[in-house]
View 1 (spheres, protein in one colour):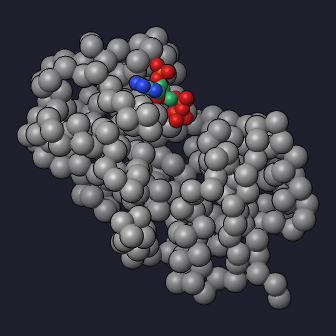
View 2 (cartoon, rainbow, N blue to C red):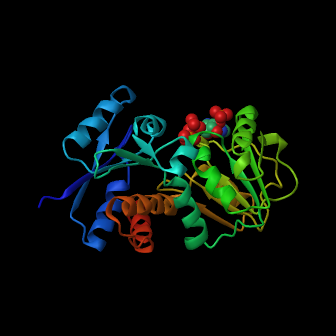
Length: 276
Ligand code: ATR
């Protein structure tokens, strides 16, 4: 029997680490599958996805800028994908229907709780950004019952709208960066794409304290601008989103193959790969 085909689709996709991760998961769990990269301009996304499945593909990971388009294209959505309004995992079901899931929030929660041993329950949490990345993790974060969840964004209205839209999942408020006050936050999560341009959100000194944990959902070979900034502010601990990347992949792998791979060894391998 030939190996089942999977891929990550995005633009740009050349630097995606997903093949590295899924190839290790497959080897570890003895699954016969291949995993490739597919570059897709937005105008061709639907056609490329449909062709992939028509030619026998079994599942896709979807990355920027296609996560919302993937939600529209899905025949069915999991509740968490419905809530996020975005899909990062497509799975072909036995009846031929395409299921859209979103494993980003679960991946973040697993990385924070299981790998980094960060407590969210009862803590003051600050989420930076109000775009797709923030929206995707908001409901799972609220589900962890922080004492306070503030969403701060360059465009304050976007943060306020996002907070209002998720009120059913827990209390949260939206504001601009300069409105963030009230002493150091316990946990600060960067879901802006500012780091990619080496920008850091302009927060007041005092938002980060010597007990703050700062997490950048982005990652790179070097520390991101946000991680460097947090360290300079005296944060107790910082992390980039490599663990989230591996954990969201593990959730997708579980949906596709029905087995849960070990993530710790793959996070370690990916860190070593990025350093080399
Ligand atoms: P994503 O899916 O990665 O979240 P997005 O929906 O385009 O992408 O959202 C990008 C986020 O990063 C937004 O919160 C954006 O702020 P605005 O809503 O004000 O545009 C934020 N962002 C991007 N560049 C930024 C910068 N240089 N400084 C601060 N925030 C920035």
